Image: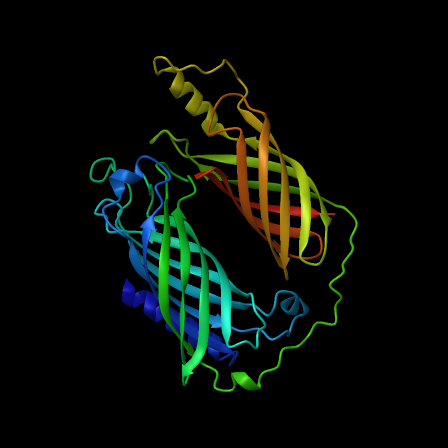
Length: 366
């Protein structure tokens, strides 16, 4: 598997290098700790996780106006390997798309960089009722994964070779597509090398955008439909589809940001199953109901990056038939604008550290 990941990165970098000479490779190793976000983590943890990331990064120089507004970020692909040092949890292989955002002037030789990556991961030892019933972190082999990295980078110290070091946070779970799904969160220190594929990088110039940073737009109204599948917290209760209808208004503050206010309607058949199963358990105190839909009001923020945007929202249920994971929820989403009105979306919904759904959707902004 390690050889496959390495070969995959080489193929990606060669293909991208054929399109642009402004690129570089990174190789990082890390050593960290598992965040004990739930009591089960004490059983799962047997040591300090270790692993590595290999990444290809393509520089930007302002060929598109938005790049100047974000200090000319890099876009790239990365692959990762994690050994949780646990016979129960096993290992994790992952692949991501990522952006690197620079804090300092791009012509500075010393850089502080923030990376955000999202992708898919494969766990080698998921939950099995008979052979591995202690692994409550991963209920499936295929999972979603995100990672964030804050690090120092210096390029071309010895010819094309430079160094990088910093901190990284790695999350992996199946977003409750199937229980169990407590997931794993790792904080780690990382150190590595970078290799510049462009011998003429110092001759490149950064193009300043002719667009003004001031941007005004009237209030826009959004309607979105999202769906997916998930399972309740009760293992083996069954995977079923769910449906989410959202309506909200947004107001652009500038070219980068907008604030949001709206409502979500959640129709989740698993809640009925969860409710009926709990009624069979002695001393369970759930109020009587035959309505299993929830309505939440939320406030949010949208960060626009070219045709992509990142949504973060926090909501509160105003219609809540019975206790299930809490009244407050959070969402983190990616939107891809197809044109000026229509968009596709991918959104993760959670209650604190417990993911409930991963939602795929489409919407319109008017």
